[in-house]
Image 1 (spheres, rainbow, N blue to C red):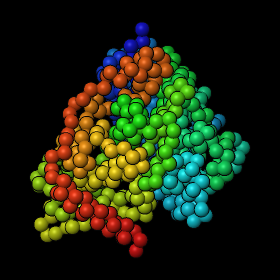
Image 2: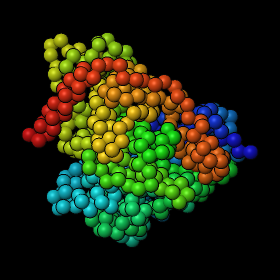
Image 3: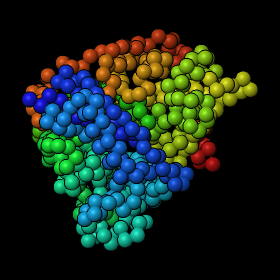
Length: 496
């Protein structure tokens, strides 16, 4: 009997692999950071071959740590950084250019042009997305327009486009499969979330040949089998973009349930059931997952910079040596003493969608120390999440009483408490915080009948800690007012 599920968790700064058992517990994991490439201000790239080599490397390492061979693995689930765009040659399997990362802003001017041409409404209606350089469509177009011979080869059907999941599966299956799932497809700005098909009108707007596109499948099915990386063939059976996988891993399977993932960025998602809701608060409507014939939708607020602000304190400012040191430094002061940090390094995401905004620190005095800056940086993560949650409440008409949280920053107890104080709602941390990888494992496990049903999986979710609001509401209102002023300052700088 195959006893384990292997989960690929391909993230923005590292590739991870986790082996899960039948109880949904991690029995072995491996992780490897890979190179971040910044060719120009606002440009962010990855080497697709390094993404693949790091991911397959940690997969074999995690299996070795657990003492497992390929015959012990019932299936592979894949979750991935979304929107990141790779175009490769179908014959050689080689990328024609580096992966253009979701954070990349090089197509911002083209996005402005589309808005000026009145394309916002049609794109929003079909895709649930707001025109922004964040999504894949403008990145694909840029590659076709700027890489020598790319358009010519694309017109001849010789190139393939994929988000990171497609690239991994292409390599896993030795070029046998060019597929994606509905959750990743819904982040490209080329996919109609109502018809569940690539949209001809959108392809025309972006001048992208249909021959580039992967086949779109459900999030939980046997797509195919590995070819050559392992001693025996393993079914590849689950795919979901990282945030959708986290929503599934958190078992937010009923409408109105909300999770927030604190990673490089910060992503809040609310399950809204089987019918899409068009946001009036500049949130995204996206596909959560499709299992069997059932498609679930979600509202999402994307915050571009969350954990990345801590990396910047470490690498850019040098006030901490390791990311984990930030909590200790911030704890040296009771609060930020009026310092606000708006980390708009890659523009502002939901609900502002100001792609020209830049990072801003306000309220500095002669008495400001590195501890105040660190505290303001952590506070900024919670303030951004508050803005998104309020927008979700407005769109859905549901008062949110509980926020399920996951991701690296949830180990920071002070941040989680401040988040609960700001939201005036409980912040709930599960025992297993690796919910992104777990969601992919669950989707794969359901497809290969490793787990019999959703009910069996739901019973595995366990509470670690609940943070309830403690600070007075008037104090919170005053802090929030200061945050709004700081955001206005960041936007004013961009507009001047």
